[in-house]
Structures are given as C-alpha cells and as structure tokens.
Image 1 (cartoon, helix red, strand yellow):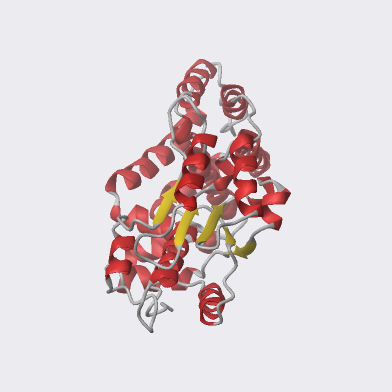
Image 2 (cartoon, rainbow, N blue to C red):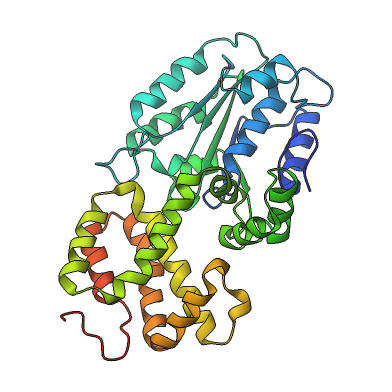
Length: 339
C-alpha cells in the first residue's frame, strides 16, 4: 500500500513510473501532475523533489540532509510556489511577478544539489501573463532545473503549457486503502477512518486534513447544519445568507461540496440505496429528510448544485448564483419560503 522510500499512500503506478525515469536518467525537464483537489499531487511532487536530489542509493531515503531539508521546506534548491489567497479574490492568483522570481531562481546554479526543483502548485490559478511567462522557460529550460506543475483542472491550462510537460494523471484511491492508511499511519479509530474514507471520495489529503485539523472538521459540521436548516428559511433569510456567503471566497466551493454530499445522501435513501450514504454519522437526519422532501425536487436541486462549481470557475457572479440556488431549494409538504 505504501511505498517504503517515497512514503506515498497509493498511486503506486505513478511512483514506479517516476522511479524508473530517475533510474534510467530519462526524467523530463517538466512534469504536470493532475488530479482532484487533495488527491495527493503536492505530496507526490515533494517526494519527487526528494528523489531527484537525494544522494543515497535508495532514493528518496527520507533520512539524508537533502531529504530532511525538503521535508521541512528549507532546501535552498527546492522551491514550492503557490497562489496567495485573499478574501477579495475568488481563489487567489499565481502572478507574473512570482514567475519572474522563479525564472531568476532557475537561472542560478544549484547550491547543494544536482538540480533545482520548482513546484508550481495549482497552476490553473496562474494569470494569463504568468502562464505565458512560464512558457518561455518551458521552451528553453535550464539544464539544471526540473519543473513540476500541479493542477486540479488541467483542461483549463494553456495547451502550449500542457504539451511541453509529461502529464501524470492521479486517480482517486480506493476507499479501503484510505481507511487502512488512516488507521495504520495516522492512528485513527476504525469509526473515524470509515467515515472519513467515505467522505473523501478517494482524496487521501482531504481525509488526513479532516482527521488532524479540528477546525476544518467543525467547518464541515457547520456547513451540513446549514444545508439542513436553509430549506426552512424564508426567501429574505436565504438571500441574506447568499450575500454573506458570496463575500467569503474561500468558503464557496467547500460549502457547495458539503451541500452536494447532503442532498445526494438524501436522494440515495429515497431510492433505497442507504448503504451508499456518505455522511454515515448523520443517517438519522438523512432518513428524516428523505421522507420530508420530494425525490423529484431533490434531483432537480442536485443537478443545479453539481453545475455550480464550474460556473464559479467561469467567474459567474457568485451572489446571483447562490441566490438562484437557495430560492430553488426543495420544499417540504405545505412549506412556503415566503411564510
């Protein structure tokens, strides 16, 4: 399940491919690691950086000076670059100034290791000028530099960027593999591991974050409480909620994901598929909701919900989107949102 040297949960085929490329000296100058958010892209990129610069035969050994510095984010020849998030921007952007800084860094000789490794995380956030600036580096890469891009939306990248990288597409992990890793490596209880594995949708990073960060878990609980409460609110209350949420850029996508998981579970119970419910800690509440709402209405609302993340990525006005969603919430028998 876990590669001893790379310390990666799952993605065995990707590890084997990269290890083989290193062993044969055929690692490309630029890689694009693609896959769902929190599926393990950043972890694999950092493990690759360790493997590239580790001086031991069993690279990456995880014990030498180079591996230790990379693990602690202090290696002078390895740089992790990511967008700076802000409340005013929807996601934050990777800007041209950051790429120019990367280019200056790449132009210098390595200080301690054979290669400089630059990891550009979530490159779908790069502005067009930033992407075009990186393209120049990809076309004429310095021989001592290896570039690793990660992206959850590779289809949104410039085709000229993608064509100059070798793409490694990570797939969601089997839930049993996530469950086993949480118990054995992160010491979760069997009950915790089972719930988190179901909720993760194959994203090991997501499961680990929820296990180790109590605040993130509380956020999940809050969003699900809101999902259950909002159908009983008046139109005025819903519109006020939409306005408040639209001002919290970083909260939009996680909130939509939580709502989607809730209403999908309700629909599963309505169709006699309770064994496939994701939020297994809320089965009583889900069962009550399944009897309260029309399956047809739940299905129509889910269709709207599932389109919302992509609409946000296309810069649709988030407040208007949320208002439309919340005014089309399923209603229980006899309920009016104007009451």
